Amino acid sequence: MERFEKKVWLATPTMHGDELKYVTEAYETNWMSTVGANINEVEKQICEIVGCKYAVALSAGTAALHLAVKLSGVKPGDKVFCSDCTFSATVNPVVYEGGVPVFIDTEYDTWNMDPVALEKAFELYPEVKVVVVAHLYGTPGKIDEIKAVCERHGALIIEDAAESLGATYKGLETGSFGTYNAISFNGNKIITGSSGGMLLTDSEDAANKARKWSTQSRENAPWYQHEEVGYNYRMSNVIAGVVRGQIPHLSEHIASKKAIYERYKEGFKGLPVKMNPYDEKNSVPNFWLSCMIIDEDAMTKQVRGECEALYVKKSGKSSPTQILETLAEYNAEGRPVWKPMHMQPIYRMNGFVTREGDGRAKTNAYISGGSLGKDGKPLDVGMDIFQRGLCLPSDNKMTVEEQDKVIEIIKSCFR
Image (cartoon, rainbow, N blue to C red; front, side, top):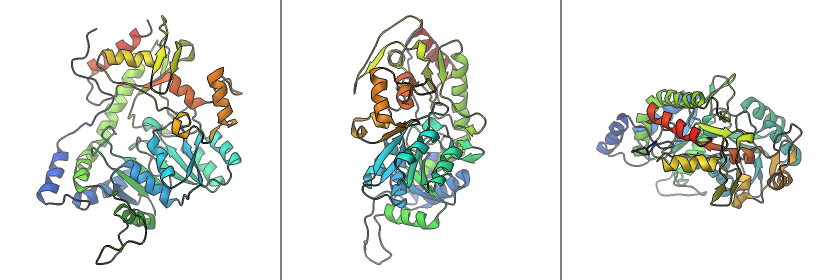
């Protein structure tokens, strides 16, 4: 097979034209700052889509998560339970406020926070009152079970729906289940503003506080009056114009992403791999990224350091590193799944809880010899998914022919 002449990307913005209309409107009316019709409109429209009462347009999803942590009352030294398999932006805002993340292991059914491990975590840390839950790759977690655990222990939920805008759980949109919720319009998300994000809540008081904090906490005075620390977090009216032009295409983007997922699923029949799973009874993902995981008995030996990886080639088997390197040789972009937070150098001393308790000893045992739980599966689920999983090219603009070629490239790695 020949290399792709034009690179096949993991995920890039898919633009339609109306974005430019609203950006031009901001320019021509001279509303180029952090107020304007575009901001007002996208806040209103996202509330209607998600089903929340208030939306605060901000500079990034990370800014939304930071203000959510601040609103939840996290103080220096407070432990906060966080999803383990996620991007660091889910966790870093906890540290901004001086909190101490404690990571909750993942479950295989959705690749999201394990409610059983969360219950175990409350046994170990009963004082915790905030739980940050992410929905990985656009797939909702086990929301009812997680909410039930949190309610039993009097903890509120911050929902990181940065990757899952448009996904639903039992007919309700993600971004509506926590006390404070965050979405993202980063350049590779399901819809984009090139940057930007939103804090979502049903609390008018919380929304007003977030708006104030996001504009440097200015008081209602004729001069610049400040009584608390603030941030330069408000969304630009120009960025909001891009988001405004994208919103009508959300369903279209989701349908396109789902088609990509289904083509991979069909194309991989007969290979010792599975697609990233979801609860087909209760959930409808937005299929933001299609991922796959290699069956355990089809994995070749693979070793990862901090920045490099080695693997052994073997007929009939493969590894994520081999597949990703082979895709790159053909000018296609894949990516390892998120490296769990408890494996990151910055967070290796933080608590980590599996469904059988303190996960640190289990992780070390898994590294050295493969410690298994009572169900015969690895105790450190996040590490196992990271070891065997990868993200596939999932760009909306990828043609069927290009995707078919990607599938053939991956098949060749198992020959």
